[in-house]
Length: 488
Image (cartoon, rainbow, N blue to C red; front, side, top):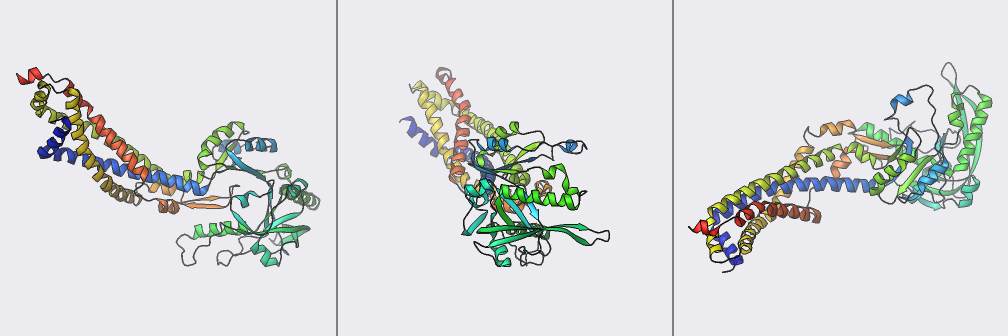
């Protein structure tokens, strides 16, 4: 009888020992499987959420890590140079980029858009002028807005700073405007008397030819009956209004409008606080669209050394880093459990099998004394272990997945992870990366423990690898067997 048949017979005849080994591997396999299921699920949440957020980055002042510097009265902040923005835009991680001059004007004759909501009244007056140096308009390319009529800019429009622009369909509807019309923006400056009354200082009429009409794709209104988080709803309302009341213009056009406003303000009110040197400088917000969200960290490492003091790179995926603490903590916990379970499995299986080998030393000694090769005896033990562990691992693959689901749900609903949620329940973005809102609920809803090819492969590799490593001690025991001493 060859060693393969002996292995099969040994498993079936010695049912007690086989069941003990099966039970040990099954229990430990459940722990490993459950931990891997949780870890894989948390990683999948991070990947899917970051993919939805996209790989977009901008450069801004790092107030959080430089509070002492910004508290100094004589602080002088170096403005980002256009040449530096272009140099960063040449990075191999960047798909395309833009830098925007942004300002806001107050209007009376030009009606701004409003939302049909009780909470939206008085939240926005006037319009935001968003300049572009990228003719195709980055927000159109990134599907933050959808062009429903007309066209985007030409390179000539950008280079010459023509008075052409794109408005939202809501603004067009409010003012009865359409493609080709001349829209007049009545930019107004106001002051306030000692009694608190509003006083108009001057008005500038800015003619803009409408070449395009868009609809924001990220405007999502909450159900009026759903008022679980009024603050979150208010923030969403504000972002929606900001998108609807944005007018896209070439950068040069925005800068010229801002320059005319400041010159007129200087004549009308020389002591105005809006006449600081900073407000009169050309200021752009750069936005870089990366090839993939996976390139964010590499892009940050490459770009940070090029930036002036006090600046940092901020990415759209930072939102997940800010409020995904629960998932990170759960991933860490599951990772520790996997390591502990693997170490425990190695020790326990090694010792159990080694004890079984000691009971079987006469059997193994007979095989060797009859001329059987040590490699065949070792092969027999390996096959016995693989048969038993294979069945145990396949069964624990299924039960461990359900165990992981129950444990993760319990953790998410417990106080263990609440501290991560309390740090920041929502992330709002008004930083050049678009108007965004990500909540802990969004991340929790994206979490799901399920069977996947990655989970199955990872578990089987870890499980079988652990069992094979655990076989080292028993195999060393066989190598050291002396059949003459055993048979004497």
